[in-house]
Length: 326
Length: 152
Image (cartoon, rainbow over all chains, first blue to last red; front, side):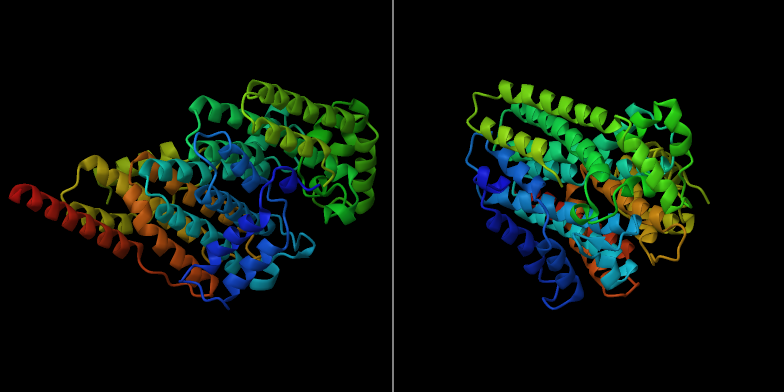
């Protein structure tokens, strides 16, 4: 059973809401490159984890989940999609979900503006959806967070930095991934007038889940096949990203010299040798353990929220995160 | 020329801009001076002028960073990231300064600039004009509210 089915969330309605963000924009002609490119990106897939988390969060409130929550969920995915367009440009990645990345079709300058259009459109919509000024401010400042960019700056600063500490890695992961997931649960909960303490617990749950998600993602980069990943195995290392498996492997002095020698101009053979060393060093098992540790912390929060029927949805999210292979 | 308002705006931006972003605030002082004149022509509190000038400057910087991005530019990554960060900073600061009406007013304009950019046009509606229209609207609203109160 798919995650949205387990959670009893109508994904088609969420997808329609996401597409409506651009389709109902009177300033964008239906047949324009901008409209077609965005719709193609949205329809190319994606797990829709963030909008699902908004809806799950909304089930902890005091009023029922309705249209405003679905619209909020859609805006979160729209913002996420806009960040993917800019990420692909930054990473010079020509493929997204097995399809040509947007900038390869539209041109780089145009794709930058399309990504920025998506963020600007969300701000415009939030200001028109919300009759309640406080709600508007809260959603706005939560979604349009500069922390995502800080995570990217940190990643950029530490390219090929083999002295990256565990704490620095965790902070980067928190900024880049975990905070937005945590925010999805919290804004969902607050949108249905949940108790602020409950919303805070959901935030912490989302942060643990997000940390586990990012660590697991970094693990999959070493363990999955290129077919499933849609990119070469060890792609992060090839691009200078020092992830958790690399940090653990570097703790073994006999591996450090080979790994530290990897740089932008390294050959395929050198990279493959380093990847094989990391894979057989026990670092992957250590990485998996830390990912599980975060899930265990998240599990503790589910127990604290067990008086809410929706705690079962948190369990479904956690089970999904624990079992995903791509 | 460096006025007190400009200096305080610059200090505010330096304090608010994360050192991790490492963005050089290469601000066009002449343009700031023109915008300062605009702000001075309205009856605004000094602190609000600093806030509005800071928001104006952050938006101008964001727009300029995202301009003419291409693969042959060795600074492409930084340009994209800086533009994204500065747009987010604009929202965060505007929320912090309680300039929510400004966010709402500018949102459709900023969106249209991006649509024009995506169509390959580089010229955008002047941010200066948008700010002036926003202040005119606010000023007229304030005058009519005051008149109603006096009549009432």
